[in-house]
Image (tube, rainbow, N blue to C red; front, top):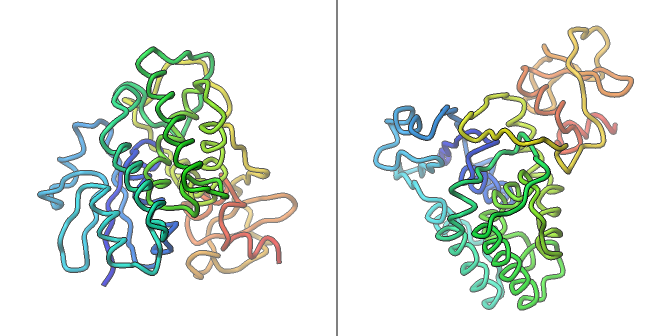
Length: 294
């Protein structure tokens, strides 16, 4: 039996982003069925998921036995304990301790950023200056991220060596800092950039854009700027499927019915969602790139 993960809109729901990132990077996606719900407002969450009591939060992970976990750190610890071979926490004891410390600080802190500056992977804004309380939290992030990298001797873009639960927990924060364009310290800027170029996060954003649902509570009337990480190529939908490179969808393997133009060629997909998520960031999807590069 599989895990059942219920998440909110990928573009706005921070802890849902974290849950997907930890599962993706652990290589557990084949063991998880994901259901996405699209509340319009925060108060709209619980009425949409009455079957997930007592959790009634997004995300909620339902274990194969039927037990529900409605807290991201609980999900992380349970998955890590059930799948020790996936190294969701660092192997090194010192690095593991620091990763746990950082993940739990994110889970319990940074109230100024989290309360007034919502996650929004749809837009990036410019011309904003961090208020005093936000600047204090930005300084704290620079401090703890630098400390983690120096103490663990990380030689990767991530906090404690290889990507871990700590990085998944901070992925939504990285997107939040991107959205509002606050000035960042050097460690923070490099760390945020690593998340933006992470194929797993790129896939998550592309899938969210493909769905197109907007949470108005998370939109702001600021001057917009381009999203900092722009894919090298973006496809366009087309009705003409007369000359497709492929006859079966790269994801499902079923016959194609929806089509995308990329460069000089047309590619087919089994449904509009498969087409559109690919269209927004083709290079993020290995299944598609296998066809594109063949």
